[in-house]
Amino acid sequence: AKSQGVQATPATLTNSYIVCDESRKMLELVKFLEEHAESKIMLYVLTCAFVDYFSRLLPLVPRLKDIHFDSLHGKMVQKRRSKTYETFGESKKGVLICTDVAARGLDIPDVDWIVQYDAPQDPSFFIHRVGRTARFGRSGHSVLLLAPHEDTYVEFLSVRKVPIKAEEMRGTGEEAAALAASMQAVSVTDLDLHEHGQRALVSYVRGYKEHQCHYIFQENKLKIGGIAMSMGLLRLPRMPEMKGLDAKGFFPATVDIHQLTYKDKAREAARKVRVDKKNAEYEATKEERGEQKKQRLINSSWSVNKKTIKKEEVKKKKKGNGKFSDSDSAEESESDADDFQAEARMLKKLKKGEITQAQYDAATAGGSGEDSD
Image 1 (cartoon, rainbow, N blue to C red):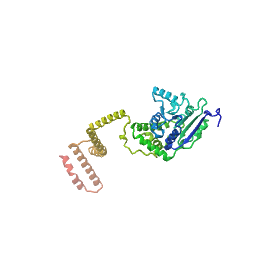
Image 2: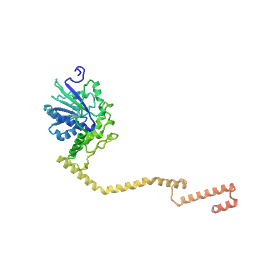
Image 3: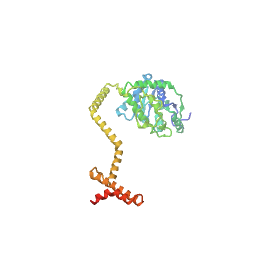
Image 4: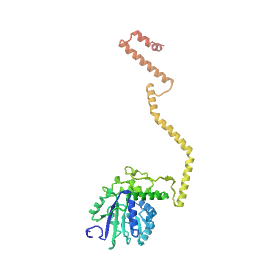
């Protein structure tokens, strides 16, 4: 081990990391928390929405039912943040799920473990995070979860004089799939959990793009399908940021999302009122929407045929000497033009010797007689 004077973290702090596929990340976290149920742990995640989702999901995992969870992030009201800080500070064990708002400036005593579910966007915050443990000469531990494409972050930390060692994965792919299925089953029971899961994944993708170490944390290498499955989501959210990401490995739950309800009775009652109002408005405007659909079909037909109509109008314009008209005089003008062109053709034939003068006079006689009158 390097001396404290050389390394960037205290000699009493042991840093470790686990490289695992995104689809097994949640399993690794759950197994770790289960093994350290008697410890005081700070769990760092990437975004505020992830804090909100984890604080609802993790207490519902059966093997974690005896662990107390608190949450802390920058979008909470000050009163709630202060209460959480006080409660967790006084506790002997439990898990505080938080963002980097709790990475510096907070003096929380006797923290045993720092768990980093995600690396910080600002690499300097790695030191701040792990600095919440091993304080005042006490021993402490930290563990960082990394996806395979993020493993060069270990070298980055070494360059920054942060000693860190590898740990083996705790679970298997089969266990990860079983855990994901069980969490999907839990999400089906409460619309609130489903909604928070959707927001968490959206915020995660957006937050991932803000990593300062872009050459390590490349969003185009994210296996979003594995992440969503690991989180127990029922379906992938519809978002522009999903385009181009690897969605393989995600299996949506066979449930009609529109049939989900809130466990909270007050929220569910309010939701039903909104749904009933929307359905009533839908029925009230049914006839109007039918007329609008009919008009769209008419407009669509006009759009398809307007090129043909335009061509016909241009043809009429040419025949009418550049004027649009449907009057008898216009028809007469077109007839006169045709007679003139016929006479011109006969004159050319006369000059070429193709017809005699008598034949020419006979062919144009009708026109000459009318003019003389």
